[in-house]
Length: 251
Image (cartoon, rainbow, N blue to C red):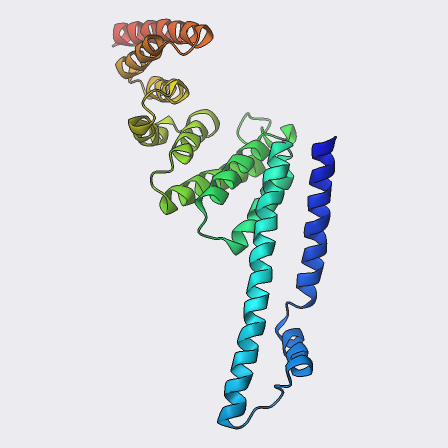
């Protein structure tokens, strides 16, 4: 209940801030305010022009500071919504935050995560009668893909985005071959990560690279993260070996 109240409070603060900013955000409104408060209506001499520039600069700094704070509020709001698993609301908040911070890799990562969740939030847009993926679902999946790619363009070593786009390609977009290079790079630094190994092994399996998938399951078993994961790796290994045998027999 306290988290809900905090979220509502933050939302109220942001809404109030947006109203205040929008009231003074137009060029004409700023000019009128400056004319009244600073007396720089029609400077003509060099001295008057210099004075006017200095006064306008101060106003510009005030406005920029206010807008920067607005961007921070949207980031906080998006994070709170994400904590509450309100992915649609979080998606909208992170979109707004990116208007203020377009080069922030973390914001693109969170937008990608939210878009992935939103893509699966409505049954009626997920599947057509013929079993194909619905248009709206695919739009959100493409947003997720593009957002992960933007995050990696800004920070090529952003390992969480590597893992995220790997999961997206393997389990949501059915393009496992695209996931492989990202997940391989991910495991170069996250050397003991077993979740990444599971996803990459699935990508190898879907791409008919059975030996590589088996090797990864062997690594998971050796790392021994917990009994459940070891059991799952052993079962998956058996499945891959059986598929490898059938594929080789048919060839």
